[in-house]
Image (cartoon, rainbow, N blue to C red):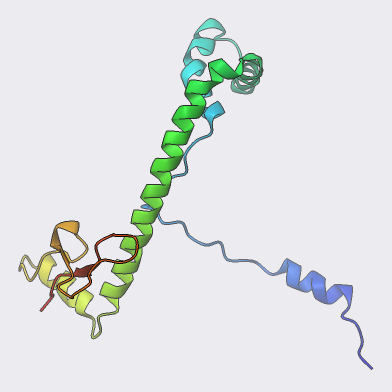
Length: 159
């Protein structure tokens, strides 16, 4: 009836080159773990005490020092890590919101973004950047608030 695919068929699929997705340089960076915060703080002191040690040996020494710390001594680093993690989540939310707004702006039709970019490049001020938060205005519709009591925003009128 049905022949099972050969191992060679799977080998050909595995050998196919994959395209690596390009990262956006404007995307927010992840928050570092508590150990990295500790290592960044203690590395200069360890390096000053042992200038002859290689980088890998210094990192191993810092790792041993981190393991020897009590939970009470690690607490400031863990608290700072949590603050950075919360800020990262806020940054990601704002980044994604801006990306969606940019996509909507680019899809306005008939190359409107290209027209505006060209006009602004020529020094002709056609309009303000619609992605700038200062150009956002609250919705005039009745019931402009959602269940989360966050104001609904819509882009300012473009034309």
